[in-house]
Length: 39
Image (cartoon, rainbow, N blue to C red; front, side, top):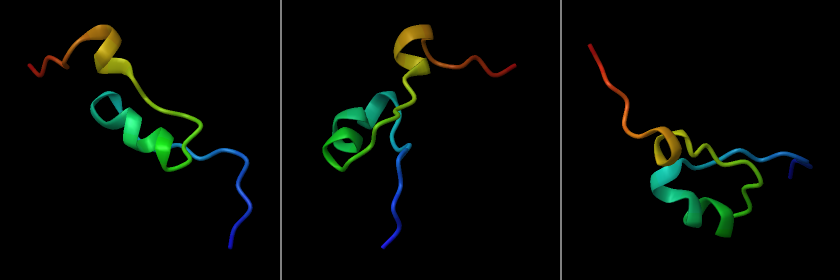
C-alpha cells in the first residue's frame, strides 16, 4: 500500500465516480469552459 495525500482522478464526465473512489482532485475544465475546439 502507498500512502498518498493527493489522489487526482476523474474529469468533468465522471467526477462523481472519482470522488466516491477517493479522489481529492478532479479536473472539471470542460464543465466550466465547454468542449475543446480542435482546429
